[in-house]
Amino acid sequence: MVNPAIIVKAGSRVSIQVINADHDTAHGLVITASQARSSWMPMMTASPAFTGSALWFLGNPTTSGMHAGTLTFTATPGTYTYLCPVPGHSQKGMAGSFTVTGTG
Ligand SMILES: [Cu+2]
Image 1 (cartoon, protein in one colour):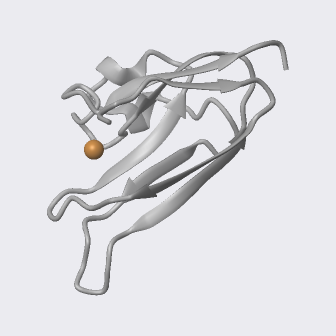
Image 2: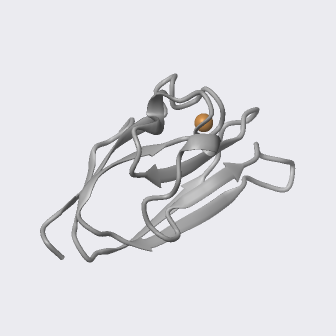
């Protein structure tokens, strides 16, 4: 799937493992409350929606392996955006919706 719409229930403990398999470009993943996907520099304008919902930078793979990380957080209700915070990437489409349903 490319940029799937993610829906979870309020109060869920969410864990997302991220692996950068792009051979020549750094990426990251941030879930943010703002409409920062149209920003050229989300790392300057987007703040994580939840404690732990940001992996700002995963470098490109090296001969010793790929960079990986895990976001772990507890979801509270709302409509959020996930995006890649590397400059220009969310503008080019590295973004999607993250929705937390219910009253938690
Ligand atoms: Cu990216």
